[in-house]
Length: 612
Image (cartoon, rainbow, N blue to C red):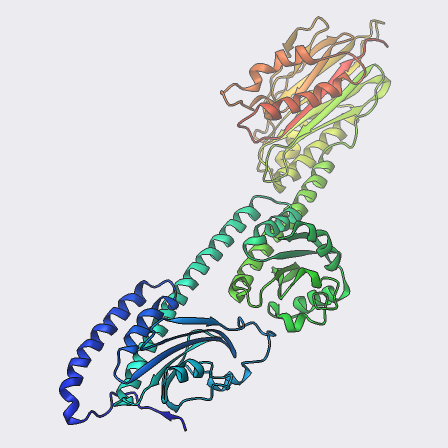
């Protein structure tokens, strides 16, 4: 029958007290050495040889065994005897669930949270719960002291002393056996704590890198692909990310350690069983983690098409942001209980991915809204006017996707006349956009009603003041009409309200400024916009633009304003569509040149055709 020994040193006979004091000093020294070794050990197995030497030196001990178990499965057995200290070793069946049933009876040995010592008769060598029995019997042990103790959630160990006929006091031996076991337990706790810290550090580093990668793009699908590329093989053997599109979860990023399996994994991810699994995760209130047993009846089980992927466990994390599901993150593992499946890690990664995706989706929606709004602030197309060639271009410079205040339009009139204008509202955003729409449509109506450029600008100024607009704007307005002398020339009347000076390219290739000045709009009650008049001959061009063009600057500090006249002279052509090519070319040239300058650019070009 087993006897649980008390934890004290027990009672020592009076005649043995002197010998025990000397033995106590030796034992204290041995424990000190064992503690020092435990503090530097990289694994508890490093303590084995020293523990066996120490325990075999105790009076009455003829053999020492150590066993390690994974639940009910023997991992290994070590032993040493007084005549052959060893230690010798043999391995068990590996400890994985499903690997035989030979050691299931060992469940009766599974220890509690504290180490306890039991005094036992020598177990039956045929009992699978006691693999220690054979080496103990071979060493001549008549009885045993057994100490089973916990090393981890499923991992435990046993230290057993085989006692010979000269054993004097098994209570003292029991206490010393327990002390040795507690040193091993302490060593294992330290190693587990260090492993947890290292695992946390690795996971934190992964999460930090994942955040950097996800923050580097504003494309939702590219965000998911970056997560998949990072996670495999660093955290999992396979990864599938689904994005919710039109109420359906669609796989958009898939990775696997075996590149050849990625296409197959994409096919498996669309199977009904997999879709039902995702639905369970999305409707639940926590991450879904499945082991081999729960996967047996699905796609990754023995009868499933994906069994060849050797998936032993799987986790599904819903990607939620602002109270809504954006997608799912699925990790596939070829091991039973991966560290990466820790709830805190899955939740943190899913939260970061969801926020990045939500930001990407918001950015995309905002971009579409801005594009749509900007499109409505500009004319859908330019009119066709006999004898004139029109071209316009718009360049967005602000990466924040705020709506710009630049605008332009062209208004055809009677008898081949044309009015055109370019303007720029101070600032960006919704308020600037509202003022842009007001200014553009007001000018268009005034010009359609036949107001000359200077009068249209003055009327617009009054409108802005009545609206109590908080922003000012600049604009340039030109009215073109045939000269009527048979030369094909066009008479131009141009007025400006604080706007950059328009440029006129003559037929001989020279470029000159149109000398026109005027006060900006929306500031003063009375404004003056004296017009300038000139003739444009066939082959000549008038270029109107906003200050985003001239204020752009290169890396070496050169403003595009200094290059503009020469650029127009070199790139203008009088062929069909030349005005559109010049406008687009100016916007492209600034985009490739500028290092500073975050203002939008509007360019409007009118050219007189060579043939009437």
